Length: 219
Ligand code: 3NM
Image (cartoon, rainbow, N blue to C red):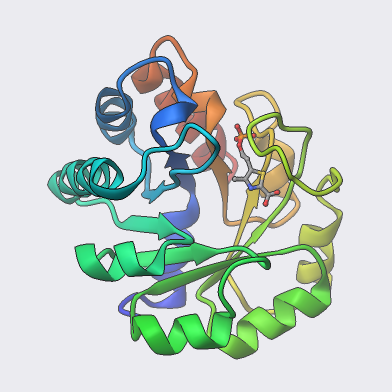
């Protein structure tokens, strides 16, 4: 359904970095470039919150970040804002349950990557039927980055997906750090999606490298 095979999507999910302008005290372009040099495998532009950029400023930041991703040959996804994703011809979008309906989004974006956040087996099956390329499951651990995050669920839903043999790539999200990423992969996730562990790091390059080592050493 997408430009990428399921195997390729699994590769992309390994070190999935997400960020917007308010996730770091450092310049977002700088943080992203360091993370790209450190080896992130996919990037999601997520400009959210009361102090988020809007309009032209948001568009320009997204455009700069997309250019950086292109330079490092890393796919660029957009959170929630489908119009922005289409205007930029992004590689894909990520939506939550409270965003636009997944079936409509799939029709709208054609063969771009579609990621959907889900919190139960039922939501996962519906997302799969709608043509999702991967599922985001979280919050695995406590996070202060997403204010309206659901209850912490550990790795139980990831394990359930594996037990049921649902064939869809999975990324864990929420509170994931270098120290606790291993159990997420061990439970069966194809990768980890991270904001603050990289965006708030003093040295995002080194931090990304360390995180990548944890994820890829477990294979
Ligand atoms: N979605 P950090 S948790 C964007 O549970 C997001 O679906 C979540 O940030 C979910 O890595 C989350 O700093 C925040 O915890 C992830």
